[in-house]
Length: 77
Image (cartoon, rainbow, N blue to C red; front, side, top):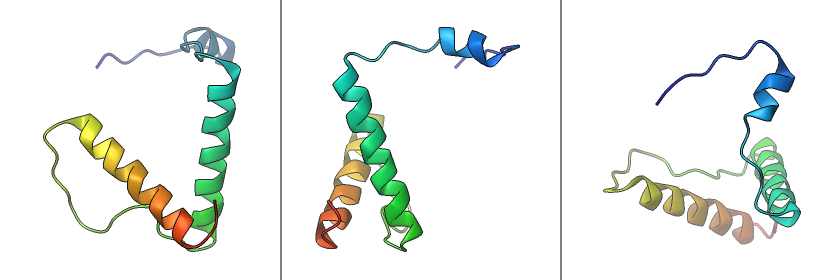
């Protein structure tokens, strides 16, 4: 994966991919905010131990599933 260095924040922001639609960006921001708040409250949102997956997307899906399950379990969502 190539590493790109930027001189200014504006230069880096220009290189960011555009969000598909404003709603997707908002949902992502809300989800990250809830996960941050849950972590601050001591709710574990990641599994313990090492887990192996054949594909990266499998691991990401499992991590997301576990985090949502934990947040729903404590009635945070």
